[in-house]
Structure formats: structure tokens, C-alpha cells
Image 1 (cartoon, rainbow, N blue to C red):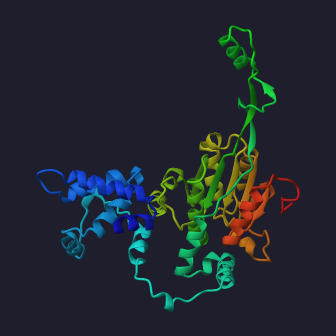
Image 2 (cartoon, one colour):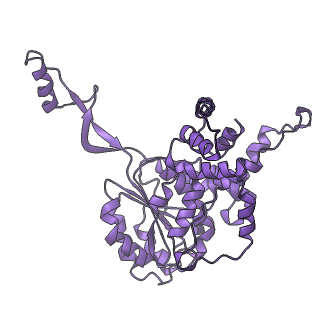
Image 3 (cartoon, helix red, strand yellow):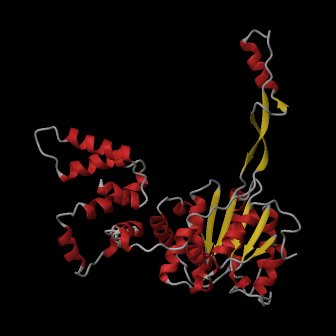
Length: 385
């Protein structure tokens, strides 16, 4: 039961029914000549408590730490020795921070007489201060709380009507083909009208995030926000660029945020380097534009506009990108300053081709972004024009 609580605190969905089934499975497995071994416990519990393959890394770490591996001391001693990996390369290690927090957060609660009752207005005030605090000025504890709040944010986009139809009782259009098929079942005596309505879908969301040195504190937090969006809805494509373009959509699909961020870090080779915005947009337009910019796609460009190449060819690529998508939104952390001016060459080349120009430097700016994108675009919402 305590092991199931640990898995639940680490983010795995383990209900009481699975705990009961796990106890029964262990009793059934123990009804044999030989006693249960450690491997028998592992495979029996994993078969009952796990529902997805991506949950196994968390389960393996929790099982090894909770049930005290007999060779744990030997491995701890081996960590103190120098290790050489040769040509094989360093093995991948994915340590879950959620599991660590779950292990050390299970402390004995104080008696009820010693508990302090906090007023609701103080709690709301701290959250409000945190939502307005800049990502670059947050402490380590505040960053952890901000990441937890980012995992709960969503980015709703208005539904668009497509040209395809689906059967619907209240549809205005009559589907003649399906109507004739239904009439043949009764010999043509009765002709039931089969109605259809247009299919409404969320438009694709494409994100281009700058990961240069000047964008480092903001891009890391924005990637946590993109992880929540990618696992909440379909048709989301995420690209990062510094001196080159990297597609990290597949890495962000993993439900465990720690594993996803580790895979993203392994995939990116130019983190916190220079910025070649024009070169990266040119690669995106010619290699990925036709694949991901169909069906009224919405593009989020996260960058400060500080280009190492002084905006060379950036205007042409921004114009091509704006004509290929339905809405182009530029999120710039420098816009948080009241005296922001479009002086850099990269900013002046990009600004005429965007539909929305919004800041992204704290939690409140991301909430405002979700509210803005949830409304249809009109002249009032286009702030920079």
C-alpha cells in the first residue's frame, strides 16, 4: 500500500482497485513450491500496476529505491570510482525529479494542534506575485512552483470548420449517398434522410522557439509549457533554433516531463549559443512548411529578435512564413519593457509580417496568450497595427 502511494505521488495513476488486484496476484503467485523471488515480485507488480510502457522507468526507479536493492551499496561504491566509457559513449540515465520529491516529501505530519491555518487571501496573494514575477528573477524554489503551474496551463484555439462532413442528426445537409444505402435495406419503400454536418477541428499549432544565450531563462520555462500543450492536444509541432533548426516534437510527446526534458536536451546541439533566425526560418520554410502549415495553422514564434546576421534575408523568410499560415504570433520577452523600441535590424525585419506581437516573460503573459488565442482574430486584437 505504501509503495502504491509512492507511485501515485510520483504521478502514476494507481487506484485502490489495482492495489487490491496486486495483493491478490502476489497471493496467487506465492501458491507454488518455491517462494517468491525478487524478480517474481517485480514482474507481478508491474503487470498489475502499470498501464503504459512509458511508466516503466518511474516504476523501476521506485521499485529499486523502495524495496532496497541488495547490490545498492556496491553500486554506490562504484560511483565513487572513475569511469571510462570508451567508444560506446556514456549510457543514458533518466532520473525522475518527481520520484525524488515523492520520496522525501512523505514525512510524518505534525499533530493537529500544531498546524497553522493560513488565510486564503495570503495564498492567493503569493500565487499572484509569482504569476507576475519575471522568469529571469525567480529563485530555485519559485522556478519549481512555476513549472508546476505551467503544467496546468492549456492553450485553447477556436475550432475551424473543414470541408469534410460527418453524420449528424441535426445536420442541415442531406447525404444522398448514405440516404440511398439506408433505403435499400427496406427495399426502397421507406427513405430515411441521413443528415450530415461539417467537421470542426482545432487548427494545427506550430511553435518556433529561440534557444540562444539571451533567451535561455525564458526558453527553458516555455518548453515546460509546450510539454503540457503537446500532451493535451494533437497536431502540435515544436521546433527550436539557435544556429540550426531542431524538431523536438517527438521528444516532448513523452508524458513524464523529466524524461521529455532529458530527451530534448540530448537532441539539441546548439543550446545557449548564437542566433541565426533567418537561416533557421529558411530551413523551416523549405523543409517543414508544407508538412505542418496546412489547414489554417497557427504559428508561435518565441524570440527576442536579436539576430547574429543582422537580419540578412530575415524579411523574406518572415513574409513566406506569414503567407503560409493563418496566424503568426511573435512572443518577445523584451516587450515587457515599457520603453521597448524596434531598433535592432532583426526586429525591424520581422515586425511588419506578424499578426500579434505579445510579451512572454512570466506566468501572467502565458495566461493572457491563451485568452487572446481563444478569441477569433480581428483588428482589435492585432496590437501592433
